[in-house]
Length: 505
Image 1: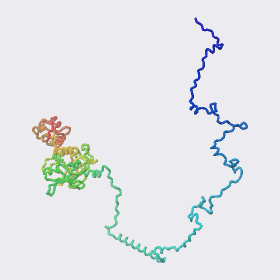
Image 2 (image 1 turned 90 degrees about the vertical axis):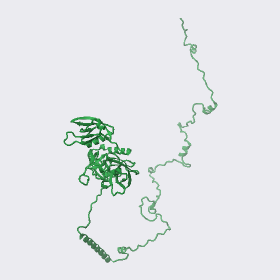
Image 3 (image 1 turned 180 degrees about the vertical axis):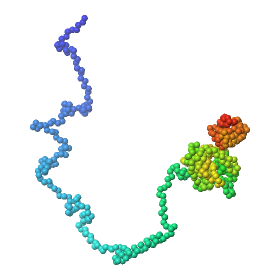
Image 4 (image 1 turned 30 degrees about the vertical axis):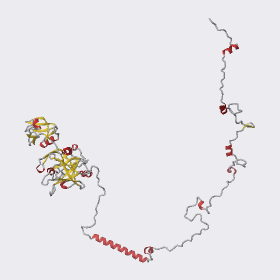
């Protein structure tokens, strides 16, 4: 076992042997140039130089002298002695010296701020200027001199006034006597005139008529050299100049190429119209005019109409161009059969019934709704008597069907209609079944191929009831050629349905 030697800490040799010596002090070399810039000034040994040493007088430290700029600004002027401030005169009781006033109220009022403003001569008249002499006042003119230019005696003035008064009174009496002794049929009238202007809001009849009338034209159909011709109306439906009208209006032009058709616009412009196509079965036709930027009527949907809606008929009844009548929709989907002109077969179509006045010459004109959109082509009327005038029952071809026919005429010049291949008549009154009774069936036609026989009563075509032969015709033409349509029949008291493929007429 090893033991440490005993060391007495009181011995100096032992304490010095346990201590480490200090590190050597490293003093890097100093650049003489930097020492000249950043070193202490010459003769300064401490960290800071004491630039000023306070002076003491009788044991009191004196303040340092003031800067030269402040001493120059606040020192006494050269040659001044004593203090700068003086005691206030209120404390001493001495009166303050007063400077003489800048103005004198008696000699110079312009310098007196309390002087009143008056119109006078110059404020500072020149001493050598002479005052102008006052002009002597002349005699004043009297009233007679002013009126007559010379002196008149007062009596003459009074007499003149009396004469003027008598003349005025005599003139008034003469006028009163003339007015009072006139005849009973003559005299002055008091007429009350209306001051308020007419109200024509948007949607009124006047506003619609003004906007729509330029798109409705009159059509004159005549043969050169003839004394008279036919007249009707037409509707501009296309900016290229296409006009939609009734077939019976231009039927003579369709039959004879020598017959001329003239379109007359609302501003009186006349131009020749060329026949594009005509369809006798629907009583519709299209003619075309060569015009620039015509007014075109907007086409509405006749299917949106309801009974009671306001409508307007625009056309040329009895050659009275640009006539406007108003009414309501009296009925919809009314099957109408109208007699053909000049021996032509009757025309059957589904019509809008209206009580707006329609007369001869309105045919082919426009039936518009409350927005001014085209909803029908005026075509026929029911009348009584020999004159054939309107009795409030007019018919128009719905715009939905009329525009469809017009497009076909513009494209091909002709129209193909769906046909069922039978002739039928309305059932007689008292029959147990109401409908269209088949009279004959075309061999090999759509009805024959479907098994329809003579004597059958057709009561329904597609989704539409058939109550007479006219309704059967419009129900068939409402479909397209080649379409398969269910047809409900009654035969020997039994009801059944057959499918018929419609053909073209």
